[in-house]
Length: 134
Image (cartoon, helix red, strand yellow):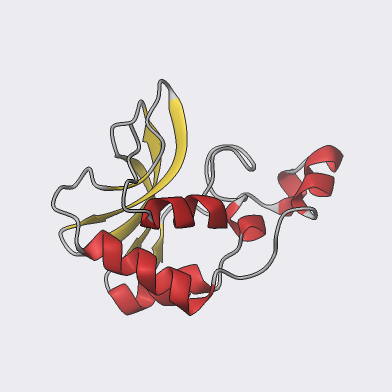
């Protein structure tokens, strides 16, 4: 894993944000969910395929695959990869990382705390047959 933009430090959070942080689900996503997400990403036919929100301005965090590299990135205006946060050269590396993350830990990725980050709900939404960011 190549971490390009580090997580937000707990020291940077306000008291209110700290309280919210500890209410977020801390259960790791686990291997099964992470593997299913990686499998779907690996089947992508376009660099714009992936899990992300698509709307004006900042769209939060998305996950993509580009030239075999799994990418965690910020997204703007629904255009896919913007600023790469982390890159994973191997599917196994991505699965291992994602399986040890949780809604709580993912809330610290991105430009602002808990702003359109990856969650278990979004990961499961991505796995639905009719998933579309649009």
